[in-house]
Length: 90
Image (cartoon, rainbow, N blue to C red):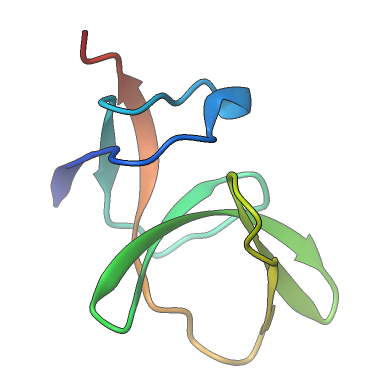
């Protein structure tokens, strides 16, 4: 299933994502390093870049002063989907 999310924050410019842009995403069962993931934490949707570092994954925030989160490979991630495209919303 595909879905879209409106970006309401700033600080993601280095990834080519700006406030007001629309993230086009879709559900996936296959994760790989470098993907932008949409995850659900405590009823909030967050976007993190997935990086592999054995024996765990590293979920890197796209901006701000938020720390990266190390996620054990054997623990299921609360992934809602992966970003496939960014639409500039002028």
